[in-house]
Length: 190
View (spheres, rainbow, N blue to C red):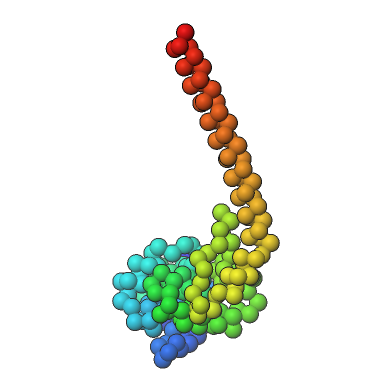
């Protein structure tokens, strides 16, 4: 754990619809405790913990919490983590908190790198887009820009090349199998 933060005394406390949400800046990225986001949305902590356990690494920031029993490993949600959490739980009902977390991140980290997958939507290593965001999530315009980006087009061109090579290999294999069967049939006929 490289991030030592005390969640009892966070950098900031912001409110979402009357619910206090702690915000910690870790490595220049605003992060949110999942339990605060879940409480603001009215979800049981177990449901939020279950979804958080399935989120990708860029959606979470490891941190240490100073508790009465000592330091405890915790994971905080990045702005993309909040969007993914709400996208899984209920994208239509929870889009407001995703948009709110994006606004807070933009305010607290205005110079964040646009290629940082913890803060912004990015093309995955396999060249795919993230799921299309809900209308009110604050991420739809960002998704459209990403979809039209040279980075995504390049990934798609590479995939087309890979598919063409795979098709060529499959055709060669099927042709060689067809010839083997034809020769075997001719051998049996003699």
